[in-house]
Structure formats: structure tokens, C-alpha cells
Image (cartoon, rainbow, N blue to C red; front, side, top):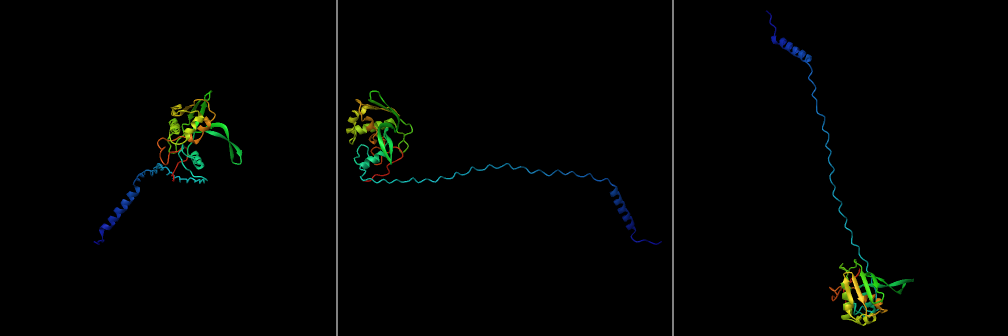
Length: 236
């Protein structure tokens, strides 16, 4: 009997062919559904830091140099005697009222026989010309920002009439005989009562010699002044 080599080869090949045929006839596997790709999450806007304020450079104030033909002998209101002292104190201390000036051209001004408020925003004179009532501005200050009150003007009148200097010689021309005739009614009301009507009362009150003095610094070498100017140093 003739033997064939490798008897199992044909059987194995037949099994493989059968498996392939069965696989081809098998039902297809359902497609696996895949999830849609995730949408990118919106990133909320981040708060922005406020802009850093830019430092404002300090503006250098101009310096005005004034040359006098006389010495500034004193900046005490009641004691100056020179024209330089007169001009200096006029720029450092503001009175209650000021004389009205008329511009006549060419840089010249003429003083009228009229007066307007300075630190006083308004003032009244009684019908008989003996009672002067001044209403002070509530925004008036000394150079350091301290409010100017009626008590400061009361101190000025008291110092003028009883303190050092020569201003006491002027008060008789105002018919003002006593410091008691000057009363601080309240913080912003000052009342001056004269003995009789006098033509020079308003004129003298408008001088800087009755400008507001700060009692706290009146005896200092560099007293506190009114308005935008201050005494930086004094030289002897």
C-alpha cells in the first residue's frame, strides 16, 4: 500500500479553508459609536489690573524778585516804618476790606472813595455811620490752611490798640477809643462800633495794618500770613 507523506497536511488545509468560509459568512459586527470630540471650554476673561496712576511731576513755582529802594525794616504790621516794609506787609496780610481801584490805563490805577470786601465777603454800615458789621468768607485761610476767623481780626485790633507800635495813634481818626468796641459776634462776624461817625474809618480798616494776624505765630520770627504768600526767612 503506497503511503502519502504528511497525512495531516490536507486535513489542516481543509479546516483552514472551512474557517475562512465561515468567517466570511458571519454577520458583521455593529460599528462602535464613538463620542463626539469634546468642545473646548471657554476660558472666562481674566480681570485686568487697573492702570497704575502716573505720578504728576511737581510744578516748580516761579520766583518773583522785587527790588526796593529802601530796606524792609519790619514785617510786624504795627511796627514797620519804611516803604519797603509797607509793600512787604501789604503782600503778606489781607485786611477785611479793600479800596476799589479804577484802571486809568498805562498800568496805572486810581483809588476811589469806595470799598469792597477782601477777607470780608460783605459788610454793612449802620445808618448813623457808627456800626460796621463784617461777614467773613468761610473759605479764607492762613497760609498753612488754618481758617481765618473773626477772633483773628479781634486779636489784630486788640494788638494794634494796646500792643507795640504806632497804630494806636491812628485809631482816634477812626473814633475808635477802646478794644472793647470790637466784638467777634461769631466765627465769621466781626462788629466794630465807633464813638461817632468818622470819615476815615473805612480807609484805615482797609490798610494792611488791620490784616488778620495768627495769634499762635504772631511773636515768631516768621509769622503765619494770609493768602498765597508766606515768610520763608528774615535777615537782620
